[in-house]
Image (cartoon, rainbow, N blue to C red):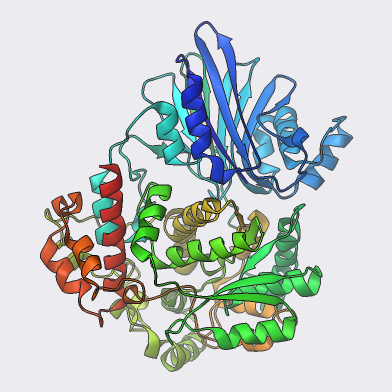
Length: 610
């Protein structure tokens, strides 16, 4: 894991600009920093900056920018199957001087060109300069785990960076906060912020997931997707076949993501997702697992009993930390400044705190269960979407409705999800992701609205919904926040569920296998049977890292009140009255708690960057 930045065009970047940018990239890569300027033709050239966090092949010979023949590479991420790809390249006559995945990547791109992107399994954002063709190739991994922001002030020139602040420093540019995107975030919530190309600054965009952009000296650009998931439902697949293949693919996904020359830590909750990864690492791969956990005294989010079972039965080590209530506002201000955007949810404030503890214990790699919900079905609305997909099987539908009414219905708070037949009555119902957005719109100085929309990826209401979540709603947010939170503390985050083979197989599973006996993730549960402790697999409660806003924000404190309601550019966007009413209501529903947090992050963002 590293930080990259650079420029392609006709301008000359002075050393002080390069040094300032490298300084801002230090957290992403404290082990080595370098920059190289390459003249190409006439007054045009390229500058590549790299800041390294050493994880695979710790020697200086693997530092970047990395040269091979006529190519120079600046790369952020990990190529998990680099050992297998290196063996393929050796058979083609390639000779390697390091044990790094960086060298494998540049050789693969030299051998196969852009076709290499569909041979590699990993997470990446890279810049490859071809000094013969005089082209710059930028690319992001299939799921967009690693960020890559771009700014193009004129045709034929391009700035890029892993983080917006590095992009701004390199370009000597103060970017303009995007008020329309702030309104989108406040009204429609975090699930909306990757549904359009807009970002939190007007001038900034990014390379899309599973895509590349290539630019040449005369300014011509080509941007394309290199990967479209193979969606081929196997209607003859039995439940047992789905379980067996998922088990095999899960073990392989974890195995290759355990490749590192330094120790690896695990984010640990009481749920199936993190415990699947931890249990595979411990019981199948014989890894000395150290888990890191947020301790929560709120009964809605307390998972201590499941964590205790996991620690006891697996014999793993666990580090638990109470939710911090001190210094919430200054911590949030620092985090918003580092993110160059509002923090998306309270969960990611807690995640940032947990990553700090992982770093303090000497770890620079962490593993999390991100995206299991979106791949194997884990949200409450998935249960109702599933009802629609099995509606023609009367017996299975009846049983599923009974299970839902027994186990899920009593705990669902979203009013649009309290009827098990909701999507059968209206398959186009999508009011639940943007809960109360009509109300929150009235809290703005100028009412703002944008209807929910989704992309058609495939047949099947449930699995099409999950693909929208993976590529345009929840997972992009989670990945970007995970990356920034971990990098703040010089930690690399890995997400084994985001494996192409696992993902494509999961979408070949018939919908009727996904939920059984009122339990979501049924294929994953049974695939992990005998690996994950049974009480965790059989637990129907979904919790995750979370906390109410009033556990962190002491609204009875006069200094906190003064800060919240002081003069601020946020009041040009939001009315003060509704905020005052919400902030002091300590019994506010979860949706209002989320809005208050979004308001707070937006306020800090505008105060920092306006």
